[in-house]
Every structure is written in C-alpha cells, then in structure tokens.
Length: 168
Ligand code: DAT
Ligand code: MG
Image (cartoon, protein in one colour):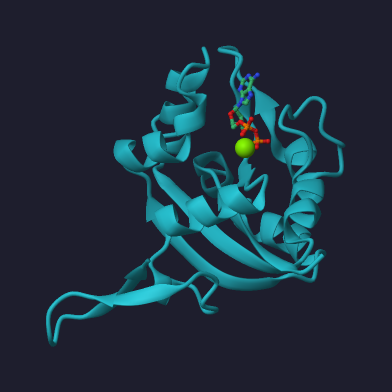
C-alpha cells in the first residue's frame, strides 16, 4: 500500500473536555506524519457539506448541531491531516467503532465517547473512511497552503499580485 492522507476532526466535545492532548497522543502511536492542523469554528454550510451523504438519516439534525458546537456551547474543532502508509486503517483502528458502546474500550471513541439520549453517537473524533473521502475532506476543510505536502495537484488562481494556490 502506498502512502495516503486521512483527515481527523476532533469534535467540539473533545475540545470542551480538554481531550485534545490525549487524543493526539493516542494518534501518535500510529507514527504517521501530521501535515496539516488547525482549530476552526464550523459553519452550518461547512457542516452540511461534510455530512452531505447522511442528509437522509434520522440523526442528521443532531449531527449538524453536534459538529457546529450547538450541543456543547463550544464551536471549536481541531482538524488534522495525517500522512503515511495505511493511514486510513491505522487512524480508524485507533479511533474505534462508530458506536462508542461497541468501540474497543482502549480506542479513542471507546474511552471518551458516549451515546446521547437522542440516540446520537457523540464519538469525539471523525476520521475519513476511504481515499476518496479523504481527498474530498482535505479540499473542503483546507487550503493548499495549509497542508505541508502537495497531496493533490494545485493551480495558481487570481489576478497579478493577488494570486494564491487553490485546489484544481
Ligand atoms: P464514522 O464517523 O465512523 O465514519 P459515519 O460516517 O457513518 O461513521 O457517521 C458519521 C457520524 O454520524 C458518526 O461519527 C456518528 C454519527 N452516527 C453515525 N451512525 C449513527 C447512528 N446509527 N446513530 C447515531 N449517530 C450516528
Ligand atoms: Mg464516516
């Protein structure tokens, strides 16, 4: 398997509960390289684009409230790009199963996640599940200049003096 990228999002509960350090420590067991990282607030628009494939699910409205910080009164998330061999499987193994009650107790979700009374899985982290998803998410959450490696082709856009690198 060649090297690949994976997006990890530490969701608002992770930041509110000051779990960022614990989660990054767990992820560092993978020995993957961090090639992008930032803390941002998630707009409704970004949330809708990120979870577009789940629009029909009954838990979708709660999921949007969750990722935009409405459930925790804290709209910060930390978004990272990890890079390396089998990055997706390695990160998803450390994250654990989607349902925190089914996740291994020593995984991130098993240790720190919970199920809300609404039924939503409050599972602390997001991790891309395929190379296609990782590409879509990197292009959605990051500008090319914010990722250290040029993981996908870029082009120069804009007029003179105002050019910047954008995703092709
Ligand atoms: P994953 O985050 O493991 O890739 P997913 O992409 O299917 O899982 O779902 C995105 C998020 O939606 C997930 O992290 C938590 C929530 N979710 C998924 N399935 C759910 C369910 N059956 N009930 C409640 N919340 C769910
Ligand atoms: Mg997913």
